[in-house]
Length: 309
Picture (cartoon, rainbow, N blue to C red):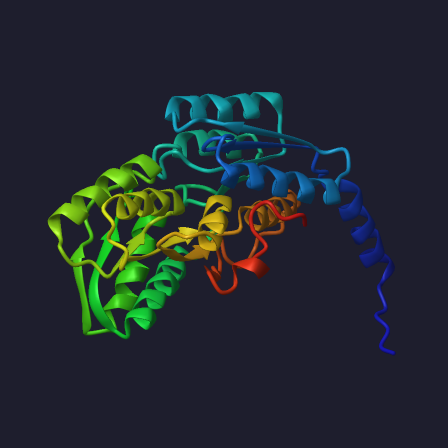
């Protein structure tokens, strides 16, 4: 067995480093909405990770409800209360930079989760390009490389743009696929997914498949397809949300969703944040979590957002 011999100086240095290690005592999370199961799972993942590091760690998860001023206030309150780490899902990827800098000036690392934020120490998000690609590759495969497809777009944040880019990459490899439309913003919501899809169904007599940028839009689009009895249309999306698990097991037109793992994203964010507190930076400050495709065939084995870890 190989043994490592340490000098007395090295041993003293190690003991000093351990003694001065900063303990993770308090974490603040500013997330989109605590009414959204995605962010509920994220808060649970952060709490679970924090408890492993320090059983007495306090985790405060707040929803800014897509009000940027409210998010600024939450970050400033976290700074004032002296948290050790801030995780945020940015309401604006650029506008939050001054608040992020204020936190960092106070010695508080800031990690952006799900969406990139300018100035954040680390960004951890789903590999959205890959997610869009595998969701649309499913369409290509099921259509045999031929058909009329719609990309139902959404709010122009980085994650949505990347999903659409990934989808277009997959579709472009099939010359027999025609993209009928890719510029309609369904706002990431069920209601707007319904409204936008109703417009598409009126406009286009033949649609073979639809890719929506998230699950709420997919569910709204499915309702529109049912209302107009266009039963040949196939829908895919990105999220792997609890609602889509139900839809994949039911009589819907939704065939697949590229999953995200908010629980794992937050777990990793807390782990890396704790390491940052002690001067240990990751090799890369942008970390992408690969997506897996959830389909009608494998949904029974899918461990979703609400699964116990």
